[in-house]
Every structure is written in C-alpha cells, then in structure tokens.
Image 1 (tube, rainbow, N blue to C red):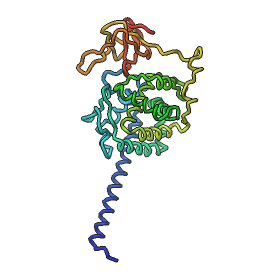
Image 2: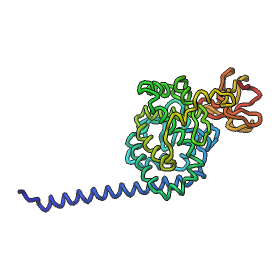
Image 3: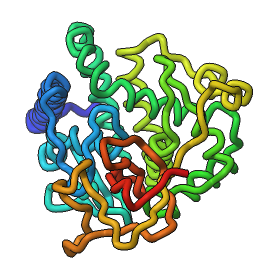
Length: 331
C-alpha cells in the first residue's frame, strides 16, 4: 500500500481544519442571527409604520401593514447580511430598501434564502424559555396574521381543490399584478373564514394573504415559507389543527337571520374625491408616485371597513383609506 507523504497528510489536516472553521463560523453566525430575531420579537411593541400612503391599523391589519412594521425591526440590508445568498432573485426591492408600495410587480424570493430562514426559525423557537417569554407579544401583534396565513394555505391544500384548480386560482391572483382579485370560486370559499377566537376575517384581508401564497407559488418558495411559518406558529399554538368544519363558516350559519351580514360597500358620488390616510380633512392625501393626488371614479364601489366621524374607511385596491361621507353613500 502506498504511504501518504507528510505533505499529503498536512494537506488533509488543513482541509479538515478549514472545514471545521467554516462550519463553526456558520453555526456561530446562525446563533447570532437567531438571537437577532429573538431581540426583534421582544420589540414588537416598539415598531413603527414605514409605508408611505397607507393607513396604519396595526396590529389588526393585513399583510402589507404587518410587513411595514416588521421592516422597522430588521432592515433589508441587515437581513441580507445574515443570509448565505441573495434574498431576492428579481423584483422591485433594491438599494437596501423594501418597495412595499409597488403595485405593478413583486419580489421573487430566492428559495435557498427562504430555506435558510426556515431553519433559523426552527433554531429560534427551539428555545422554549424564549417562546414562553415572547408569547404575550406574539399574541398581541402577530397571532392573527400568522393564523390567517396558516388557514388560507391549509384551506387551499386540504383537498377541496384539485392541483389544477389551485393553480388556476394562483395564476389568476398573480396575473392581477396588484391586490384586486375576482375569482368567484376562491372568493366564495375564502371569504368565510373564522379563527380560533371566533372572530371573522374580512374578505379583503383574506384575499391579501391569498395573494401572498400565490406569489410564493410563482417564485417557488411556497413550501419553505410554509415550513418556516408552521414551525413558528405551532411552537406558540401547538393546539392548531386545520379542518374545514372548524374554520370555514357553513352556508346555514352564513345566511341565517342574525348571522353575518352581507358585505357593505361605499359608493363614490363626488368627482375628484380625495383619499386620505386618516379620518380628517387635515390628514395627508393618497398620492401617485409623482406627488399628484389619486382619486376614485364616480360610481366605483369599495368595500366598507369602518367609519369615524364624517369619514368612511374603505379598501381602495388593497389600501385602507378614508373618504368623506358627504360625497359617498353606503350600498
């Protein structure tokens, strides 16, 4: 048998040593990253709204406003530095900034990056002491959003839809290039969600989360995203188990007298009506990128979300905005 030279032995030793250093550095970086996410979770009560031209209704909000607040805890630059690869492969996010106002396109995530983050999620919630300590904050600020995301995903994959039907729904959602969605089959099914606290989910909110999953299907990250989300959610709420009977409101309850009312819409009566970020004439207006005001058209109908004084809160293509009652009516 040929004997290895002293140089060959040294070479192998160097390779082993170098590999050990790389592995140790990776593990150390993972520990540091896990701690950074723990620190962020413990500051959920100190977030700020980072979206321009978007009414802030955190934490009872949809996915856009949730993303806006979470972006104030960990910046895109910081998140990218944690990852072993680019976070996005394409999309509007650049120069270390998230473009959460873009309605024409969306960021395509890198599957490798999402797989890494899913593994990081497992490391974070494996710390049972941390989970117990952070649960009140998760309850107050992220429980509802994560719960809706879980239910929407599980409703789409529970066997109600065939793969062909599900892909049709996803394609329809992606092709809208924004937040509007008009698919009767998916809409009729997903606008009847009820959570574990028996609260009802407005269809405009459930559609936003449907859009999120459709886009993750399109960029090939739906499985690792769900893995990470499920890991986190079930660490805090191990009792969760999806069933259509539990989370989808049946016909007899939906239509029975005294049950949920039909959705109400705000109809635009006045031309050049200003959309505002708050229920006051002194609140900023909703603008185009060039700084000019955006206006709804006379006769357009928007989902009614609430009211305050002389203003209605409407769902304007995915944005929660205020309009004057004087130039609108309910339908």
